[in-house]
Image 1 (cartoon, rainbow, N blue to C red):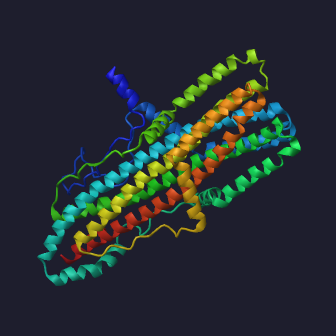
Image 2: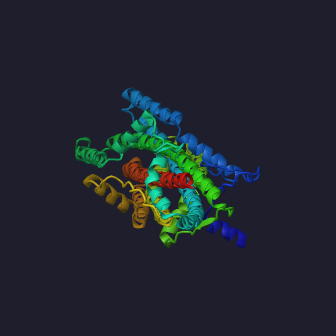
Image 3: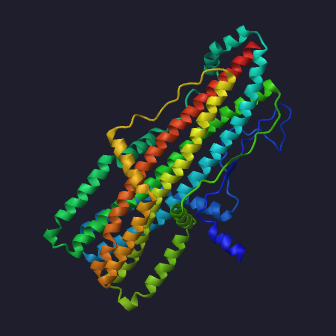
Length: 488
């Protein structure tokens, strides 16, 4: 019984994260059991099911899937010229789009959880090596103090020269032209102007509703349009996340290469053989509401929600004859997927903000610890690059993002869903009642998807600056070590 309860309690808890950088053994002491791994090596999950699920998620963010979604949307638009005026066509397309969006919800949640775990392990490994660097730099500094003061002064002037002569590039890898174009499109989609344009379109649709007497068809048109937009943004966000994750890994590989070389040279100069320490990042403290949100996210991230959707579809098909396969029956599956998808939209934005805060805090610790390395070595630290100045658009976007990510906003979203269900029940789940549970959730979720792109862009900008600063600091430290070797 206790084991069963522990299994139930496990989701939602963000455990402590452990990481240790591979120790760079001195020449002649490297063995098959302890190779000098230099670059960044992503950790493989021990369970085959987890590896399979991660593969499915990576495929969902691939270029073929993204272009397949675009082709599907284009086909829908072209066929709509002929069939778009019928209710059955509108309902069918709405159902398909709601189901596709529901599935992508699960993929995006797992993407977010995987990114958090990977970045926290990276932070732990960087901190693990920083501890060794600090120990060996202190030993090196003591040795230098015993040398001629003129040599010590000479080092400061030699650092830049040796830094430029290193076998490593002075800059991190750059994206391809296509990658830079996709990143630019991401910033356009996540711009405050795009959000303003979205809501302008919504209010224009509402204002023109009286011409159609606020009919079911009037609602269906908006439901189809917003669902199509949502599917596009889901596919785009999945793709841009995978693309940026791959680029980040290439940058991490460059950083780890320099960091490993720095460690190896310090060990050679100091004869230090102590292995790198394991660093444990403690579990974050969260409120009960946040824990409940994380619990739900872990549930969705295991793709259990997709299994439930399959079961619901089977039940939905089974009751089709009872409802004579009418328009109400067709809308039922879209209503279910739409309501769950709306809740997932709130949860996704909350997760994005909360998990990003934890990662940003760890990289801030790395920046602070790097400063101690330069103080220990007795050389000036390079000036850090900062994120571009906060414009009015950026400040408004970030404020809006914080409001959307708040725990209370997630709770209000859940209560809104209950209200929509109550309203549809009062209307006896007629087409109008079901559209009440389709159109507002579709609009709200589309808005949250755009906000998710905004949040992703902001987080990606920060992590790139952090990576460039981390790389520059390690290059300078490596230049210092080369300078020491030249004067000895």
